[in-house]
Length: 483
Image 1 (spheres, rainbow, N blue to C red):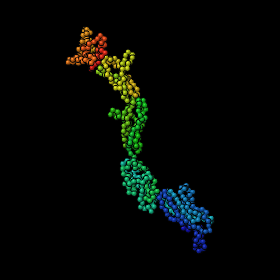
Image 2: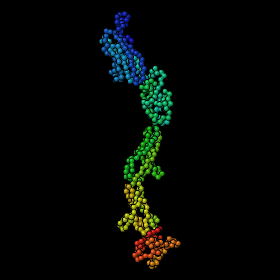
Image 3: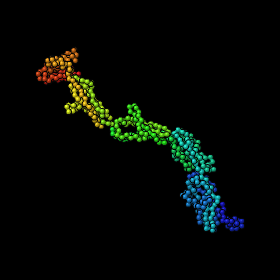
Image 4: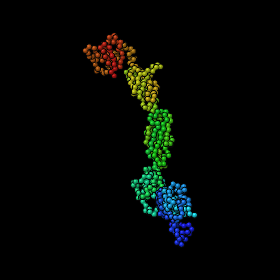
């Protein structure tokens, strides 16, 4: 390309005057460039001028303007002049944008009067852009999605392009149906969510702007957590938290409590449920339901086990009703406690005093005959104790009908009757037996057969109708029940 001031070159040429070959010129190689968005291009350029002039300034500008590209904010730090003030006018443009498409020209200024020269026409730059289109734009788990890579202002060299796809900047595998373009995702799930972009084969470093695929799904992995962890004691404050994985996030939460095979819906619909000053009535299994506009899901149950000291403690005995000497009764201490009562302490009331009579790890113990009176128990666990009300155990002594008869019989006859009762209970066929030990100390089975000294007679006591009396080597008489 040759450009001269006025008709100087033309006249010089026509007149074949010296200096014709010194005409002004700017040459572009190539004159048309097509490149991908984000790439860099080099516009090759050379220029010439008469030997008698000196180049004082060089720069590139857009067609229709005279402003130096390097001084415009749009091209700042993206345009680099590779030439000199002799004959090289090449220029490099980096990070191409769609708006960079257009015509660019080189201009140089010399010391020659009016010597401002620009090579026109200049270099035509076309910036090709890729764009991803997603259909449908809103996707729910299980649906099919189609991603299409559109080529805007395609370059002639890319008339039949092939494409590569990226998800979150990683090459998409062939697990989905894909034939270059479009990319088809069948039955999408949450793992398909991400940023998708495409690129031309051979130009993987210049992908399209990313499009975000958001897969919507109902709540899942719903769970309930309990705070604080560890033992919960009556009076504490407890927080139940319902968590879930959902898109969009769950907006409605429903709480349920199950106790004794019955399920109750609780008040409140928030993801957090706080119970202050908790009591034993709140013990049970809790679960929540998380819901969004796609669906709902339930959590598994978590146990809220409230610990508390014994309460509602009561004492009882069996058999009920009047009892007589020779009978035994079972005293039972009952209490509501968590953890269960680990021992019960029994007391007998004597006037205004309370006498400790037993401490048992179980709730019941056997009371021997002849111990009527007022009793109460105290139940204990690791959190405290609680006292029952008093109960009366009515031992009536010897049966009342027998006292009426015995009142008119001499003491000797009374002994005979008792011995007879003892024999009768053991059976009419029971015989008195005696064995002589090496020291000739006799052992007797019934009181009627015991020869007693006056000292021994003073130690004879009433026992239950069935009894054993043993005489030791020092002539001590020992009585024991055999029932």
